[in-house]
Every structure is written in structure tokens, then in C-alpha cells.
Length: 255
Length: 324
Image 1: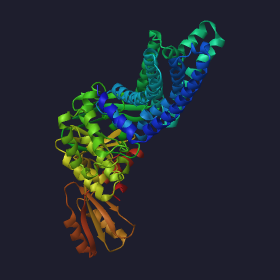
Image 2: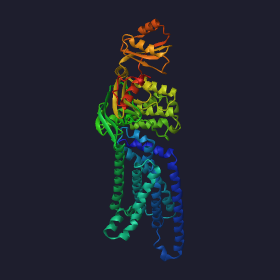
Image 3: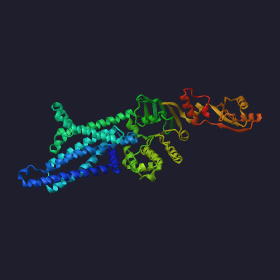
Image 4: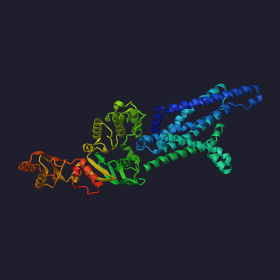
């Protein structure tokens, strides 16, 4: 499998074009703002709690800072991951480079995996940069390591799923904008489906809520590692990548 | 080295190529000719394993392009028509990436890339972004990526299109230098290019192969007569009859503007009538202005074949406005 050269090429393209830098900068600016406002709010809450001992009992920095931060993170992901993946196949198709790439002695699967891993690596960098926030919290207070670890694992799986859906959208069109909007639409639909679950109720309600992409993230941010949720994300990733592979193949037959 | 038999490709209801068969011997340079939309690119895309054929088989370097696609891909270098390259990459890292994907071992990679750049004359731009290169350089970078793994077979789709005359000459001499240890199939519109570069020719029209062979053989087949161009500075009628009466003359056609006294005289192949015509002119006191043999060019062959196809007339031997 020649995944490595494809991976290196994609990383090179991410960082030679301004895309990766702009996405990182915007992402960090927004996350920084969220962190500041959450941390500041929690700080003021703690001050009040110091005067009212009854209230202070339930205050916990993991639940009070990291959980809301993770939840904000997951919303920003929805907006940002389609931007990371929109180029991957659309641009190759538009510029025709796909014709060369797919005649090199490398399987379609290796091309796909290389590209996916590159997007995942860039996302990993984003994720790693946000470790600054727990580090700041740690300077002032004690953090529980368990929920922090499961939270980050959850973000990795959630982001990985978003990227897989994004790469699928990128493989069906030559237009980057259409690719990113399609990805955004699919993700948003999977997201807000969860809201319908309650009103539908019954068996269908349970089906809808178990398909909804965010329901599964909630457990991670609470510090619970549930196989069901891990399997959900891994399955979703595998399904999206499999469909991408089929879409690449279909394009070949259509010419 | 390349064996194609009964290859057919449909795009939905459109038939791009129908029952295409030909073969190319190792070390040969073959020109693939045809009008726009004749199916040249489609055939090349099938040979390079980009598109699957609807039916028929193609073998490149001994492997089937569909069943042993990876083996074929390891042994070919392909240059698509529009030379798609990654504009945001620099030349040397791009070629290094191609070499790596094509499976050139790490130890040889630097040397192979340097060699390919040198052969294609792109060494001086190796640190430039591909997007900033001129058309000529892009074309040569495209060729460099095709030869970087030292493939057995090169498939070049219009390698000289859009270049200036000097660049065309450079690319041609590059392709010529590749012959021998590489088998090359190249498509082009430029017919003199084929005469210059290629041993063999395959002419394709409306999706079917209409002629193939060496250029000499095609000329023989489609122009079975020797031809002499005669210009005399006297008016028409008598000259035509006189020429037609010369023993051995098969046909006489008026050439150029009617009435300016230019005639094309056909005789059986190998029979040179210039002596007889000179004698005739001397006898009749026609001032002979020009007398020369006319060889058929590939252009004429091509036009005769393709025009013949398009009017659905029996191709060869037609009264030749093709010679005009």
C-alpha cells in the first residue's frame, strides 16, 4: 500500500496553500474566545460559591469548563471540517490531476486512505493545539484526567467521522464549494435529527436518536467510554470511506 | 509491446471507439492520428488504465490493462492531453512524489528525478512552483513525470500541443531520444510531426481504425501511382490531350487555378515520365516552366482516408482533389 507518499503530498499541499493556516488561525481564535468566556464565567461562579457554601458543593472545573468547551468545539467542527476535506478530490477532478493519480501504480483505496489520514493529521494538529486550554486550567485547579481523555477521544472520533463524510462529498463533485456545502448539509442533518427523536418518540424515536451524530458524543464528554458509541463512529467512518471508494469507481466507469 | 484487440467503449449512448485493434512492436514510435473526437484520447485512457473498456482487450507490456492493471501501471508513463499537474507544488518535490508513488526505490529516487529533469530540460526550474511555469515548461515537467520511473511504454496524448515552434522542436528531439529503449505511442494533429518521429501510423476516424502501417506503406496503398507536376506557359486544351497521349500516363488532372497551365500527371508506380514529357514539350514548342516529381505526403494520405470515410465513397483510387 502506497499510502505514505499520498499522505505526504496532501500534507504538503495543505501547508503550501494558505488553507491550513487560515483554518487553524480562525479555529484557534474562536476557540480561544470560547475558552476565555467559559473560564471567566466559571471564575465568577466560584467567587459567588465561596460566599455560599451550599452552592459550591456542585462546582467542578471539569464539568464547568471542559464539558462546555467540548460542546462548543463540536459545533465549530461542524463548520470547519468540510473546509479541510472539500479540496481532496474535487480539486484533483477539476484540474484533471486525478487522471494521472489514478494511473499511477497505486490502488484507489490507498489514495483515499492517504488523503483521509492527511486530513485527520491536520485535524489532530488542531486538536493538539487546544490542549493549551486544559493546561491553563491545570495551572489554577485540579482536573480529572479520565473525562479529559475520553473527551479528547470523543472529539477525535467525532472529527474523524465529519472528515470521512467531507471526503465523500468531495468525491462526488468537481466544485469545492458544492463539496463543502454538501458535507455541511449532511452533517447538520445528522446533527439536528437528534432533536426530532423526542417528538417522534417510540421505536422510531430511538432509531433516530441512535443515528444522530451528536447523541453519541455526549457520553464521551461526561467521561464515559461506551463501546456502543466508539463503534458508532468507527462504523460511520468506514461507511463513508467505503461509499467514497465506490464513488471513485463509478466515476471511472462513467468516464 | 502494445496489443489492442476489438476494443469498444461506450459513454452511455455514445460510442467513443468501436472494435479498435492494433499492435505496436517494442522500441517503436507510433503516431496515433485522427480528427478531433475520433477516439484518440479515449483509446489512450484505456491503455493507461484510467478508463475501463466496454468490451475487447488491451495488453500493454504483456499484461492486461483491466485484469493486471497494477502491473501495467508500473510499466507505463502517461501524459494526458491537458498536462494536469499540481500547481502548488514545486517541480523537484513533485517529481520526487511521482517517483515514490511509481515505486522507484528510495536509493535511486534522487538520481532518477535528476536524470528525468535533465533529459526534459527542466533542471533550471526545479525550485519553481509549477503554477508559475510557462506552457512549454509545464509540458516538459509532464514528460518528466512520465519518464521518471523509466517505463517500458510511453503514452503521450498530444505532447506538442500549444507550444511555440522552438519548444516543439525541443520536445520532438526529446521524444526521438526516448525511442529504442522505450515504446512510444503518441497522438497528434500535426502530421509532419508523425513523419518526423514515427515509424508507424495508426489512423482512427469516428471511433474506428481506418488505416495502419508504416508511412511508406500507407502512401503506397493510397497513392498507387507516381506523379509528376508539369507547368507549361500555354493555354489549356491541347496540353491536356498531349499529356494524356504520352505512353504510360494513367491520368491527367488540372492543378491550381484553372488555365494557368499546371497539370498533375499520374503513371504506374516507379515509372518516371519526366523524360517523355520534356520531349513532348520540346516537340510541340511548349515553354516548359516546371517539371518535377511529386511524392505523396502523410497529409494527403490522411485527408484522402478521412475525407473518403466521411463521404462514404470507396476510399483509395478516387479522382484526387486530395492532391490539391
